Length: 444
Ligand SMILES: [Zn+2]
Image (cartoon, rainbow, N blue to C red):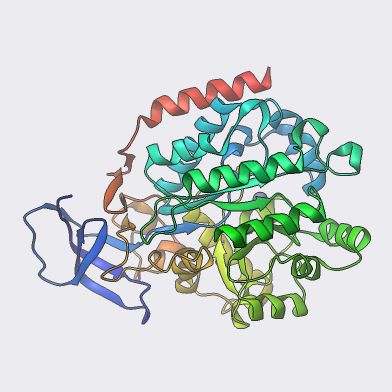
C-alpha cells in the first residue's frame, strides 16, 4: 500500500499517553499503521494538505443496534419508556430479513463513518426470517470500518414471562451453536484485526440465567468478549430485584459477567457498590447519553465511574432510540449531560473526546486503536475547521463545543473511507434509496 502523508494540520490531538497536541504537524501512514508524527515529513506517496483542519484519532462506538436504522422515528415509539418502546418495535423487527439487516448496517456504518467513527461494535440480538450476523459483517467489510459485531440473543418470550414476542426468540441450544459458528468463522484476534466477534445475550430480562452463564463460559473458552445491556433504567432495576432478588451488578457478577473481557451498555442506575465492583473487576461500560435522554432513562454516573477508575466508552445505541448515529454529537451530549448532573467543570471537551477515542478503544480491548502514535493503527479522523460551525473559535475544543460534526476525511487501517465529506468505499446514495424503499415496505 503506498504511503499517505497528512501534512500541516492546524492541530493533531494525539490522545497518546501524554495527551500531546501538536500544532502545524504531519502524520505519515504506511501499511495500515501510523509510521511517524512530526514536522517536515516527506513521502513519494499520496499527500493531503490539511491546513485549516484538526486531526483526531478515529472515534470508537461501543454500543449500537445497526438494524434499527430502518426504524427511526417510528410514531408509536417516539414518546414511550424502554419496555413500552420495545413492545411497539418488536412486531416490526419480526418482519426483517437478511436484506434489511445488510442495508440497515451499511447505512448505520456510513453514518458513523461520516461522524468520525473508525471502529464500531454492533449488538444484533434478533435473527428473524433467515437473518444472520454474517449479513452485518458483509456490510461492514464493504463500508471499510473496523467492526466488532456481537452475536446477541433472546430466549425468553412472552409465553415464558419475558418481554419479546415468541416469534423473536430462539432456542438456547441453537443460540450457542450459532455463537460457536460465527466466532470460528469471523473472529480475528490479531493486532490490527478488522473483525472481532463478541457474545451478547440481549439483556437479563430476555434470556435465562443458564444462557448468561453458558455464554460467559463459551466466551472464555474462545477468548472473545461479552456484552449486554445492564441497569438501563428504574424498570430494569425493579425487574432484577423482583426476578433475581438482587441488583443487576450482583446478578452479573454471580454469572461470570464481570472482568476486563466484559462491557455493559448503559449502566445508568449503577450504585456506589456496583461502580466499585466494575472498577475492581476492570469491567467496561458503554455510555449512551442520547438514548438515555430519548428514553428518559436518567443520567449515567459517568463522573463517578471515571473518578473510580471504571473504563468508559461511548455508544450511539440503536437508531430506534437516538435516533441519530452521529458519534461526535454523542460525545458532545456526554459532556453536556455530566455538566447538568455535576456542574460546568464536571467534564471538559477534551475528556469527552478522550472517552470517545481511546476510552472506547480500551473498553473493546483495542490498545492498537484510539490514539495517534507511531505503531498504532492508522484510524484517523480529519475535521475541517474552516466552516461556519466553528468560525471564530479559539481552540480545538470547538470540535465538541461547536462543531463540525462531520469529517472531511476518514482513514481506517490507512484506507480512505471518507473523502471530502463523502463515503469513498461504496455507492451511498443507492444504499439510501434501498433503505428508504425497505422502510416504506415495513410501514405497509
Ligand atoms: Zn442497546
